[in-house]
Length: 221
Image 1 (cartoon, rainbow, N blue to C red):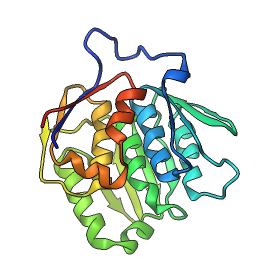
Image 2 (image 1 turned 30 degrees about the vertical axis):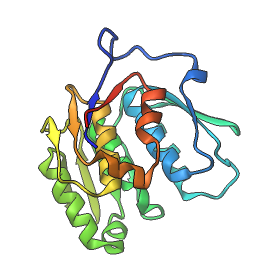
Image 3 (image 1 turned 30 degrees about the horizontal axis):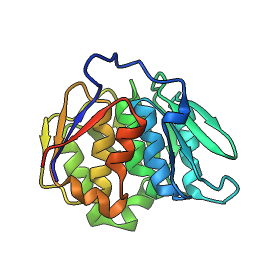
Image 4 (image 1 turned 45 degrees about the vertical axis):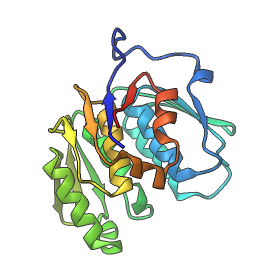
């Protein structure tokens, strides 16, 4: 499946987002991994509400709240829901050591920030799966991200959009999901091939994003 991500609907200003969260809510059925990607989608692409999380669960994914707050998103956390609306996108520092699985969504947040963000203890990510990290690093830098590894830190220069307008030959579902999120805050439409692989990781993600954000993700084939 091939999709095209339009960062904003034609005729609608980029900063126009609804105040009624009832029309921009999705029940994630306590899937914290999916909730992380949706919340970052709201932070970079508009306004949304995530329902269905057990806020009393000891989930490491909860640490995404720290990053969203440091990134200056408008965040509201309740027992019944989490709401997020994009803000001024401030650079941030984050210790990735306790929750290495958050690094791709955090790179998305950092890429949209105005300055340079830092993920510390990044060796935990690399040591977990060196080949996977190297492949993702090579792909992201090829697509235009400015990433630098130094003394256990991942340094991410913000203010960059993906260079190509069409991306293909990526078969890593998590990386595809991160690229979709980057496309939500781009300055031009982005065509993404092999998008059907997203269903292996987050079934219904494209439909959910079209439902909850003021963007249009068009299915081309």
